[in-house]
Length: 359
Image (cartoon, rainbow, N blue to C red; front, side):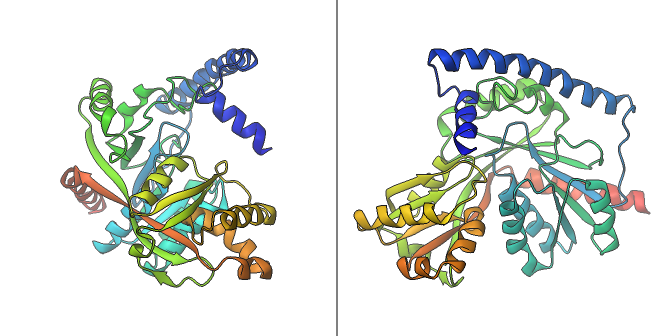
C-alpha cells in the first residue's frame, strides 16, 4: 500500500506532528528499542562466534550504510567495480535484490565490461559461484549489516544532507544501526557533498568523535549521460540545458535527483515523486503526460532505476510510445572529490594482503 508506506516514512522522518501521528510515533519508539536489542544481539553473537562467518578465498569488499537507503550505494558500487576492472581485477557484484530496478540497472551498466551481477540473499553461495566463474573479487552491495560473509574492506556511505536522520533506529527513525557502528568501518564516504555543504563540518566532527581513526572520503553524484528511454539512443547532456523539463522519480532521495537535473542547466517545471521502488502503472504515465501537455513541457527526465520499470510500460503500450517522444534517462556517476588517494591506497593494500596470504 503506497499511501501507508509513505505515511510511515513521513513519521520516521518527523514530517508529521498531528496528535494521531504523535501517538503512533510513541508506538514506533517501543518497536525501535526492541529492534536495537535485536541488532546488538546479532552483532554480539558473531563477535563471540556463536554465529559463524565464512571467509572467502578471494577479496571481499562491502559497500553499505547505517541508514535506510538514499546514500548512493548502487552508484558507488558501480564506480568501484569499474575502478577495479580498470586495474585488471575481475570483480563480481553480490546484491540482495530488494527490487529488480536496482540490480537490473547495475547489470545494464556493468555487463559491457564483463562484470557479473549475482542476485539473491545467500551471499556465501554466490561468492562461491563468482569464484567458480573466474572472479577474484566480490563487492557486496548493501553489505555492512551482513556478517555471514567476512569482508576485507568495509566501506560505509553517509548522506551528508541527512547523515543520521532524527537519531532514532528503525522503525521510529531511519537508522539501521547506532552511529557507533561506524567503528567497524574501514572507510567512511560522505556523499552528496555538493548539496549538503552547510552541515558537512558538523557531520565530520561527529564522525571523528565516533571513529577517530577512520578515513573520510567525500563524493558527489554527477550527470554522466542522457539517453532516449525507448530507443537507447544517446543524447548530449547539453540538450536539456536551458529547457523546461518534467522530473519523474521513485527513489529514496528524489530531491537530490532534482538538484542533479538542475545542475545540467535544465529548468524543472513539473516534478512527480513516487515512493522508493514504486511499481508504476499505465495510469501514472497517462497522468504525467496529461499534466505535461497542460504546461507545454515536451521533455521528461527520469532515473536509470525508474527507467527499468517505466520502459516496460512504454514498450507494451503503443499509444504511450506515440504520446511522448522525449523521455530521457539521466545517467549518474559517483565522483570522488576528496580522499581519492586514501581510497586507492586502502584498496591497493587490501590486494597486497590477500596476495601475500595466497602465497
